[in-house]
Image 1: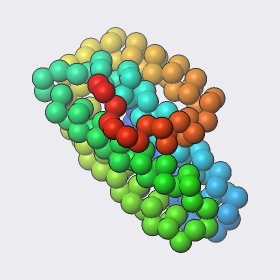
Image 2: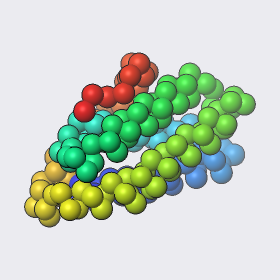
Image 3: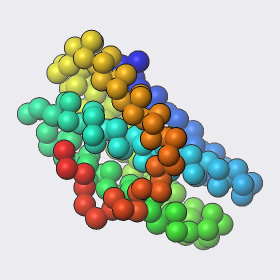
Length: 161
């Protein structure tokens, strides 16, 4: 799978998890969905920051990538806050709503609508395929470690690209 298709698929998976969290009345299902969401967002941010963004850093993308790293920081801070809350706390649903808005803007309005078309002009099909394979392997490794647990330690500053 090429890198852009991988990231787009992950965006869709995250959208589905947000819907589950916001529409279920079952506390256990909500907790499971939140943990999966937090893990996927943490792993997704990590592969973007360490593999994808460095690979696509160029004059036409640089400002957008730096902004993306700052948006990741905001999302990580929300995840860290949510990890400290009980799933049935009044603030939990409010923070989930804010995080969903942040993630949606970042993923759909910026990456999919603006960044990915630029990346398709920068990298060839073979390069996107190779990068996608590397990103998939790293994502799977991260998902086996409950990457949400690392997020609170990553909230002081944006990732260095």
